[in-house]
Image 1: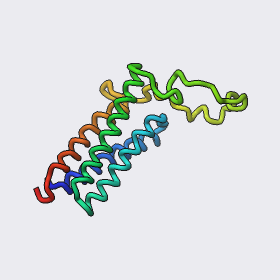
Image 2: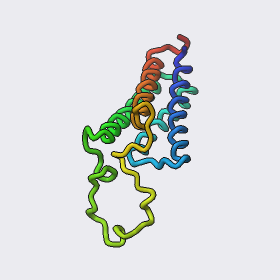
Image 3: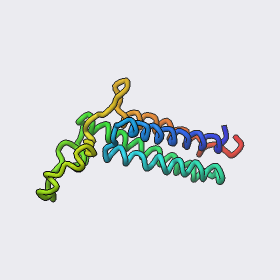
Image 4: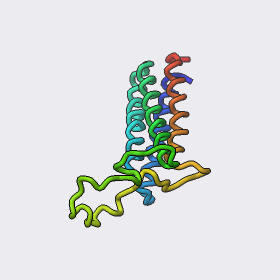
Length: 155
């Protein structure tokens, strides 16, 4: 496969993972803060794949690999938070603080249905949460980006 084909494949993979995330959200699985963080590198990878289609340079593939590794790292960190291997951000984990909130904030019910905790697994398949699957699949996408960086334009 050529570099252009590999970068297109990797970009489509990130687009598919983003579509899956939005699909789960449409089915009622609201994302937590860390879930949203994992989407940004996928969006960057999709944009890089578009750039690579017109300008198939090695640096674009390297940046795509970095984007995939960032979202994989975030997914691994999120998995550790879900499994209580380490603490997550106080803003979205069970140990969150009420500091800085006023009485009206504490009594408001406007956002209760929108608060999603990062340390709770909303959905799992084969023992892996969405964050875990993102990490696994993103590592695969990173490997495709690396292969693209190592390939020539026609090789």
